[in-house]
Image (tube, rainbow, N blue to C red; front, side):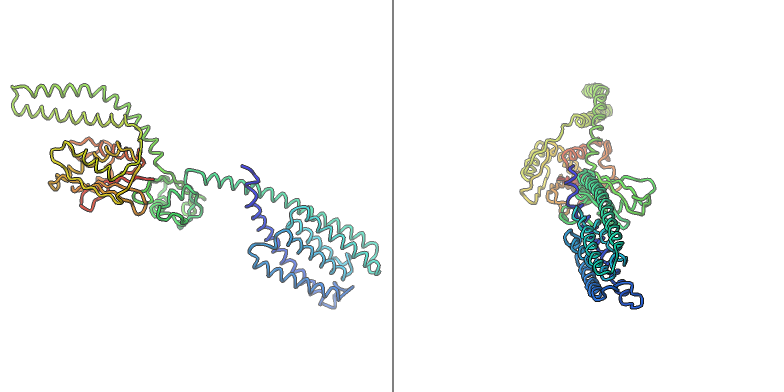
Amino acid sequence: MDTKLASTPDIEEQQLLQRSAILKVYNYYRVFIASVLLLLFLEPETQLVGNVDPDLFNATILLYLAANILIVVFSLFDHKDALAKTIPSFIILAMDIVCLVLLMSASGGVSSGLGNFLIFASAFGGGLIVGRISTVLPAIAFILTIYDEIYLFFLDINTLQSFFNAGLLGIALFLANTLIQYLNRQLRAKEGEVVALGQINQMVIERMKMGIVVVSEDGEIRLINKSAELLLATPNVDGKLLKTLPYTLKDRLSEWKQASTRQSVIFHTYESGRELLANFSALTGDRNSDTLVFLEDSSEIQQQAQQLKLAAVGRLSASIAHEIRNPLGAISHAAQLLGESEFLDKEDLRLTEIIQNHTIRMNRVIENVLHLSRRKNAEPQQIDLKDWLDQFAIEFSTGMQDQPEIDIAVDPADMAVDVDPGHLAQVLGNLCQNGLRYSSQHTGESKVKLAAGIEFVSGNAFLDVVDYGPGIEDELVQNLFEPFYTTESTGTGLGLYLSKELCEANHARLSYNRAATGGSCFRISFLE
């Protein structure tokens, strides 16, 4: 990255603030020195200052003190640090030099010792003013000092020795100014490197896909990058700066502080939001201090795990196809031939029927596993959800003995979603079959409801499949989407698992909730 690009605006602003701080210290110093000189002048017994020209000293010190007080007062209200800029600082320092030379002249020249204050003014000039113009200040001070010594020499107030002392003072003025300028340049160079490095770090953090948040002990956000804002913010608070963590993450953070080893947690910022992975790290080693939170969208991690899982399932399914499917077909065929025999009684016929049913069930398991391993990547396209659901209901009901009742409600009616139609048809087919079966068992009526709308919190489209069955017991919900888990004696335990996998392949999320009807509600949330 270009160093000049990284160092111009922010570094100049920071250096202006530093010069403003130096100028404020110098202003207080000037008021203090002017006050001390005024007190010394008002003490008639000492006569340390102003003994050569009391009137000049009195007028100069009063003007000098008043000007310094006004500058101090103005600096208190100078929120833009205008005085710390080059020209105002140069004028203030030049005024200082002129006033100090006049005070020195009224007190006897270089021999009075007041010339030492010029060294401080010259040194401050090296720190406040950047560039060659800073060297003009000691030059002005030296020239005025020489002119003053010439003036006092012709008045027989000083001797030739005073010119030698003035020369030493001039050397000290230039040395002090040059030394402070050199130190100031070195400091600015180091500051430029630090600020540029800080900007690089900030740019890297801002462009990271991983979200980074620094949280205080009470849960307030101290620092957050753009990725973390996008991951944590809910759509209805867009444009507002996040000040605290979402309550779901705050709860996980509290649990982490109380736990001894747990580092990673998975959570959702809102019910249908994307699944996030959070890692916590204490900044100081104490878990009760500020905490660094790393956030990731777990969908990418899940996709990688899914690819590994599908590869393993593919190898497993190949073994199943070779080792089980052929013998299973032979068993099914033999049972079918045996059932056609005229010499079997009813009990034996029942046994052959059981064999046939279970071979069919085993073949369905194999088909599902093979389908999972051969599944193609999603090819999403935009579909009009209302028209598509109407067509799906017709195709799904075709061929059924008992025509099911499928209620469809879409609000707004022109809602469109991006999804692979084949995958969505497979998911809805599985969910509707389950819903119709449970509704029929519980109420005697085969009916389900398909309700689509827009979630209030996230603003994402959703599609609910609601049945009128008894619902799923709470203790069974956590295992609902696990493979080969089923509560039905004839089920394979792969239907909901496959449906969830297909939804995730389409950047959607399948979740379960208890419906208002008392039955089950499976929600497909189409994430953006």
